[in-house]
Length: 428
Image (cartoon, rainbow, N blue to C red; front, side, top):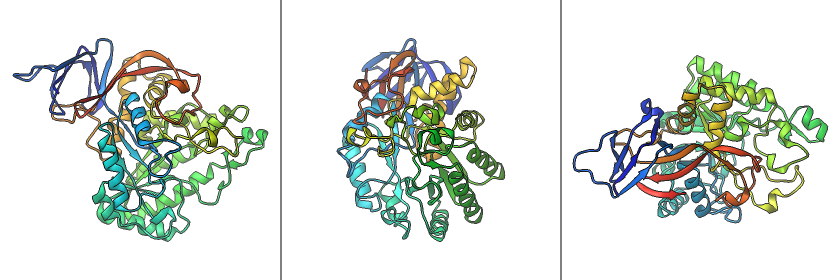
């Protein structure tokens, strides 16, 4: 199909474009910006007057719950959520059941996702067999099957020699290792940030040092191996200072933050709201402010949704018994825009700053062929109205997981259409 998107504000941080331009698409690729190529006749014209036209969003962490947890969510429901959120490329962690530690499982997931003809799914393979932290997986075979990196999800590696071996192997073959910095012992049974709020509520705490001690270990191993490491879901001011120093030193590290951690703190637990039970826990207001600043100065490379759908049976429980996790695919764009607005970014730059963190920068971190809209690029496009306000309600979420700490919030930024490889996958 040949598409003509007219009168829209093209926001393409990868190519330093933020201006009104028409976009022309044919054969799944961008064939013209501003001016139609010769002999171009559109099969469909989309009028984007008053709307922003951006590259499709790239989400660095979205649990699709398949295989194994279909009672929490299915590939169909979560891909529809991705389309409603403008997310055209997403990475899924390996903590499925069975774990993504064999090429056959990765190929099956890729095939299922491709058959739906919606978002591009890029699996992260398990770093160790069964995520047990003992034996390394066959990384080369998993890469051939379609894995773009290797992760332990939320499972720590107890034996540091195994982590060292994994980084040495990854460096040899130029793979990226995705690690969530958490000490395997400190705060292992904690459910909230160690601080006055947790003490008042009688909740066991997860100290900030569980993140910083893990970071010291990771950075020492990176110094030794020079392996490329991506740090997932940073949560503390102290941790971000260490990342800042590591980047100044020239270590090959990048990091992301979950969209909900940019806006909420441990005070938002309120009276034991289980929707605010997430991993890592919401930290103090000082930590939240440090996250916002680190996004602005580039210490944090990208924002992800950390989409983790949880069903009612596991969420509608006392805070300490509820499963951690929140739905986020459909909130990623709005929460990113809210960050740029709240951070005091110049009004004319809000869109480009916010869009960069969930397109260009995220694609660069993951090494994906996405995040831009120059001529010749794959036509993954998100068309949205930055001014439309919408209320987060369970009934408007396509995801099977309806639990988010933002229920009842009014947010700006509504996706009007999502285009994947030139095919209109969603129109509101």
